[in-house]
Length: 328
Image (cartoon, rainbow, N blue to C red; front, side):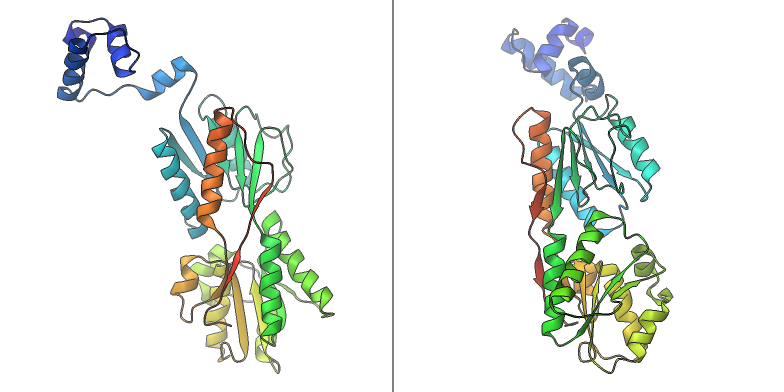
């Protein structure tokens, strides 16, 4: 471009970066030539020279999950408006994949990371942490230069369980084999605390053999003896609080197949308020996570951290709400 315009490379650079020390005529000539030849700067090269690579890494366990996808979309939009590009990494719920992505992106590639983690406990030796990190929906052990933004999973569990009891339903919690996530543990803790306060005893936790992703794709494959026996012998109204909407959807389909009437004989409450909850027939009562608030806080705090500004105190707990629909 410098050769085409008959100027030095540094002059082209000053014009494109608006650094001054050039005439209006020179600016007009260079910008016209750039438009004519569709010239664009090498963003990577420029960022490396200034030691300011404007890329954000976003790590999610499963990009096909509506909750994660909605967060990615919102964060990506925010950073694009602020001059940053994003790299979305699908970790496939693998600790090893997550660790490889973090180490690679933090090595002079990304300016910061947003992570929905699968780590139960994060050790300083696990990662080469040289950049700001925001954790969403999970709370591994806090590390320097990190912030955790979490939904009120415990409060959501309290609301759901109390509502089932108010509906005169005998409450049970249904989870999946992957119960180590901090969000799941908080939902189970809230459920147990309500039962303890209400003096409700017995084995109330049902763990399915299938993951929630498997169930939403093939709800007919749900197969748990304890669950089926409860549905068969439901002399009293039963109440199921499920770890997420995918599981709630599968239980709804199983109950309908077995001829159990919803909500007369069975009440069901999910968690997340994914599109599946409102599109299902019947529509599923659920705990709604505030995705816009989670995403905006994560994005704003990461950008503030990158720019060395003040950020929120960790952790940040975002309120949730009960959305009543056909299954209660």
